[in-house]
Amino acid sequence: MTWASFYLPVDAQIAAQEPVHYQHPEAPIEPTALPEHALLLDVRSYAEYMAGHLPDAHCLPLPQMAHLVNQMAPDHDAPIVLYCSSGGRAEQALGLLQRMGYKNVRNGGGAIALGKKLGKSIEH
Image 1 (cartoon, rainbow, N blue to C red):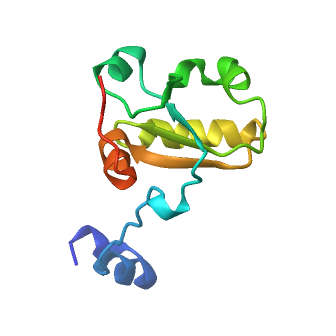
Image 2 (image 1 turned 180 degrees about the horizontal axis):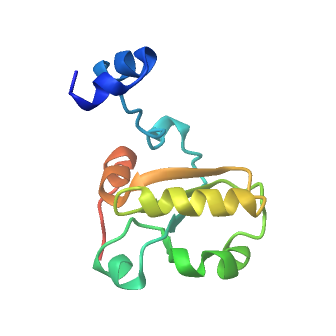
């Protein structure tokens, strides 16, 4: 217990002594959970996409997602897998698409990790 926690109520003193455990957000999907005919959307910038992307993936950068996704995926029930460099932008895109009414959208995580799970190599 540190000197500052001495002035806290007893419950807070106990809480201050307990280690904090952080939960990781939901892990990216496993390959068995991927629909075979899913639309792969790379939500990174066009430059990142051109530096290397998964085969059959379409580039739809996160800033343009809301305006252009209806052209690429007019069916809101169609399976979509999103990916980026690490999964962060894909998670943002996932939330956006869910708010837009898309029902079968998944965060695939980072491009390299998703490629390994799918057995696909990055192409340039």
